[in-house]
Length: 106
Image 1 (tube, helix red, strand yellow):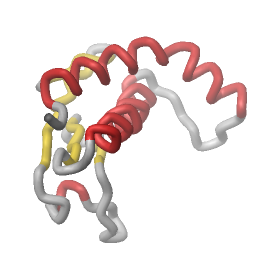
Image 2: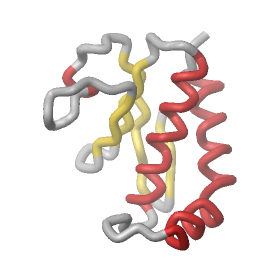
Image 3: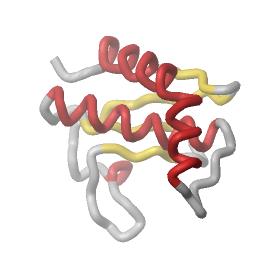
Image 4: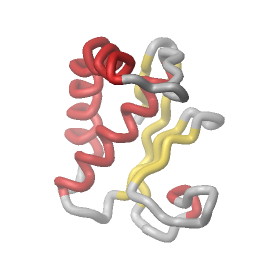
């Protein structure tokens, strides 16, 4: 599925194997989802419960929106976080529901 965020076209990809290298962090640990900025891709493990899938989608979309709108959280403050949530909460929720309804765990 392609997701357009502020002109960036992100490819959302379900991954069924928890040991898939696309779900590994730089230190080798595995996770439920990864946002790859170079490929503009979101990889999400779909062999999990509906609740974990939804939580992972929301988490990865926060990375996507931060990148796509140029937010820098290197020196995050409470105000920075609140501004980000205020600006993108509704859109992240809508995009999450699109992904879940089209690709989510059954």
